[in-house]
Length: 66
Image 1 (cartoon, rainbow, N blue to C red):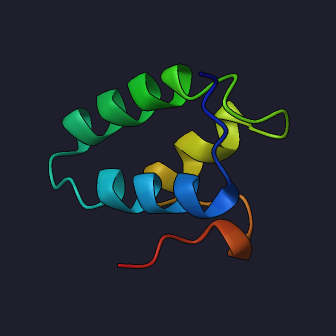
Image 2: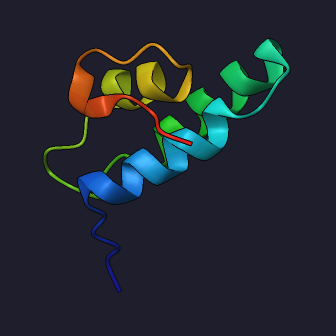
């Protein structure tokens, strides 16, 4: 079974990661998940996901909401 995630799934995962208080842990988890999510959608962008998970989205649509 091949997993196919959508933008809303990435946003939720990024929001959970962005809530991690320790910056080093948050960055590690963001990069780790970012790599693991590759291949889940042809439009997936590693850099866009990691930026959102670190609380620095590339555009307003990727802004993490609690």
